[in-house]
Image 1 (spheres, rainbow over the protein chains, first blue to last red):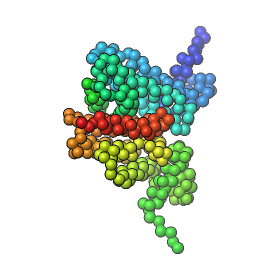
Image 2: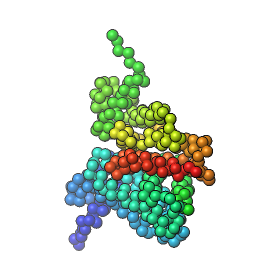
Image 3: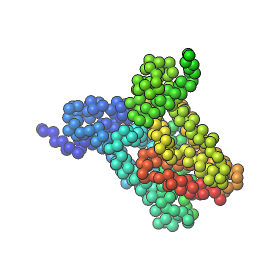
Image 4: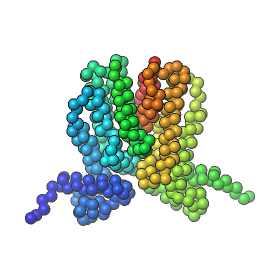
Amino acid sequence: MPKIVNHEEQRRLVAEAALRVIQHSGLEEATVRKVAKEAGLSAGSMRHYFSTQAELYIFCMNLIAERVEERLKALPYEGSLLSDLKELLLQLLPIDEERILEMEVWFVFQSKMLAYPELKTVSSAIQNGLYKASLFVLEELEKNKRLRPGLNIEVEAEKLYALIDGLAIHRMLHPTQLSVERMDELLESHLLSLCS
Amino acid sequence: MPKIVNHEEQRRLVAEAALRVIQHSGLEEATVRKVAKEAGLSAGSMRHYFSTQAELYIFCMNLIAERVEERLKALPYEGSLLSDLKELLLQLLPIDEERILEMEVWFVFQSKMLAYPELKTVSSAIQNGLYKASLFVLEELEKNKRLRPGLNIEVEAEKLYALIDGLAIHRMLHPTQLSVERMDELLESHLLSLCS
């Protein structure tokens, strides 16, 4: 029976293999040969899916962003407004082993951006998505008449967005110094400070 | 006349040369040969100053931390309490070209930490210094009876510390999306939110 290969699906399989290799061995070790082996392909066929290193990195970054989006969509949103918003924000943080690994890969990609300017556009788009998630939280508070009077929504959204990324970095770099419970507590305190 | 070489001073010169090479060419390109050339030394003599790559990285990280400390000590602290505290916090952010470069190098070191666990101790100590600076801000507000009643100092210090690092990352990765003026405005708004 002939193998039916969907090009886009195959690209995704290659990118997932690349993420696994990066997670286990670091970006420097994620050579074409190793990624091909992990994906069960010949090294020669790799060029068919990604013509440059940067192209593969961009695809991987988008893959991680997609995973986050899927998690956000899968949330039940059945609790109180504040607990739902906190749950949403927790999805953007490395709260379990899988997400710490994702975040590590993400961090390595970001550090690569200084050398590969091609990554800037996708990084910028994804960071914008994270800002939008923070803005959404503020808008929901306002819509539900919970927002403390006198707060500027854009200022607060930008601060929340920075707070989240700061916590994410701290958790990833020194997981023993910032527990998931503490992140939860800090987010709750911050959300409460935004409410009247 | 014989050259009088102070070992510690020479290490510092080598580390400063390494920082320049990293800033211009990236960490991967900062080979022993290039760093030696930049420092005006022979590649062979480098081992005399740093016996491992990690040792050089650690020294470089401490050098950046020292620069930040010196900037903090050099501040005049002559304005109002809030503007002095804001100035202090701004020293922790990449507000000019020199600090953006410092921050880029710092970021690359942090991403290396995943591969070089030896860097964890120094990174942890320096991050702790940044947390202490945030805690200092909260304590000053309290000492001067400006702190809003009901706030938990440790929670607020941890949030401020994450906010600062989040802003630093955002500024470094996408400088056009977060101006110095905007960072100043966000810090001011945050400090005001901590005051009664």
